[in-house]
Every structure is written in C-alpha cells, then in structure tokens.
Amino acid sequence: MKRLLALLLTISCLGCGYSSPKAAPAAPGVVPIIMQLAPNTAKSGDSGFLLTVNGSSFAQNAMVNFNGVAQNTGHMAANQLTAMIPASAIATPGTVAVTVTNPATPGMGGIYGGSGSTAAATSAPMNFTIN
Image 1 (cartoon, rainbow, N blue to C red):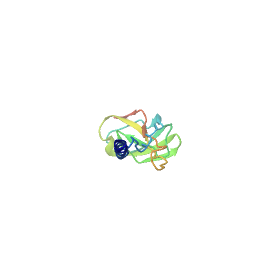
Image 2: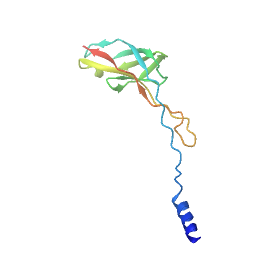
Image 3: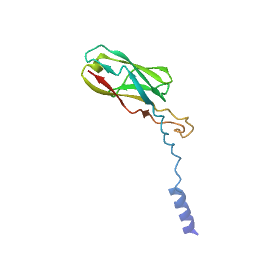
Image 4: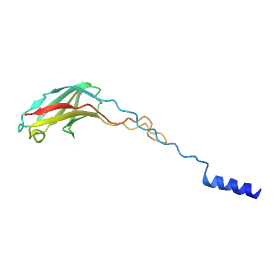
C-alpha cells in the first residue's frame, strides 16, 4: 500500500503530461497583386515623384515597397495605392523592384491569443526602370 501511495504521489508531482494550449499559428494573409505602375520609369537624378500602383487585394493599410524600402503609402481606392518616391531612391540608373505588402493582422485574442491572426503577405515584384 505504501508503494502504491508513493507511486501515486510521484505521478501527481511530476504531472500527467498536460501542457497549456498553444496559440494557433497565423493564417496566411491575402497576397496583393500589382497589375500596373504609373509611371513605370524615371530619369536618374530627377526629383521625387508620385508613384501610382494599380492592382487588386490591397488591404486598407497596405504599404508600397520601392527597392525593398517601405514608402509612405496612400490608399486611393480598393485597387489603387500611391507612394511618394524620394529623389534619393532614383539617383542611380538601374532596375528596382516594386512590391506591395499587406501587413499582418493581430488575432482576436482570447485567453490564449493568436486566434484569427493573419501573416503579412507581399506581392510578386514588378520592375521599375531608372534611366
């Protein structure tokens, strides 16, 4: 009997393998699609300009990335974003990638958090030429 009590006491002290629930991983985000850049070229050394990005699946807080750098982005319509591209970004001739990122969204929370969140999603790049 003493052995049985000692065994039960040991099991209860070590736990029964229960672990607290883990937060659900973030669901994939909606991937934006770029269909057109206006303009799609600029002359190196020119002053900054307003870039218009037309496409689809843009989130309300989507960001335009020019050569990998997030730009201050305006949301004109569900399918149109604008970004002011500074002169420093077009100082050197070449081709740069333009992408749009829909940021991650936080989950609804709950006691364990994470539920309902989505991961950030970035579009395929579209080339912009600096002459």
